[in-house]
Image (cartoon, rainbow over all chains, first blue to last red; front, top):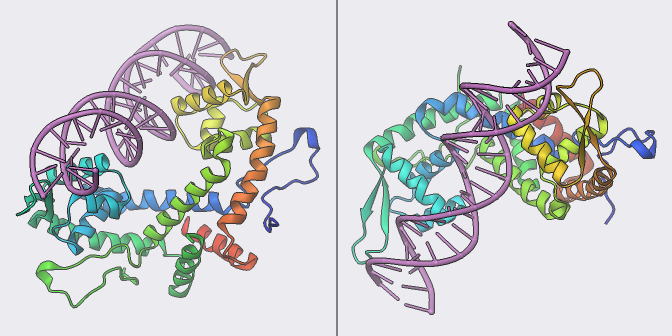
Length: 156
Length: 156
DNA sequence: TATTGTTATACTCTATAACTATA
DNA sequence: TATAGTTATAGAGTATAACAATA
């Protein structure tokens, strides 16, 4: 298929010392720059809450799917077993999540938010709203919706 | 300031077991999902070239700024000194970059692309074009430009 | 004193492989 | 046999602190 977009610039440069400015018209780089900005802003707004993006997502999932087990959580977060284990260990140590036994299957735990976890999630939800507002502060509501739509089409 | 966007859904849920679906209308999550997709696609298209995004960016910068030193490269890549050192070590070991002495300042090296590095960058440039085309395959040229513009406004 | 590059060290996030207990 | 959770280990990518050589 033809390549409809050119990222190369300075086509007048001599072949032997050609310049490749890959960053100048690259959607990939633009996505990365924007995501770095979002990541920084996330910690600016939620850093005091002892919640990384992954930890917050886990709490959010647990608020919607109480009693989910680690394997299912790993699948939802798209991470491997040992990774979710460390995540749940950390959340348990912070007092946000409890592992509870399941009657009839002693292999698995049911994961639940603790009262503290629920409180923290409420605070995080507020902070996340502020994060989203700040992130999109230069966009109108229509432009933000448009951006979401375009992103979803890149995400395929 | 007022919060113009709401990420919360299911407002009819009881307060004691409120659900927080942070992912449903979050620009932050949309950015992350899209970037993960881009990252995967990058390795699909450029994985065989022994170049990570950071390594490719370094080669691209060296093609434009031949003779740059490590400290300057670190600044351009926005990474710390020891990090750029490892990066340059790896690029040197792959045979893409050479450290050359600088007359008049024996503290620093001038970094240059080798012939192999230049060849690899040409191949990477082609592969990167294919990557960009695939990434934006569901967007028209106008939509792609619009997305870039909206992203640049989120990035500050 | 300041700069360049380096070493030593450590942290986060992720993974795979092999294991135990249970089903 | 298959599943849930765990342990051990490793690798990529990043950082800070302390240092040597040089300016």
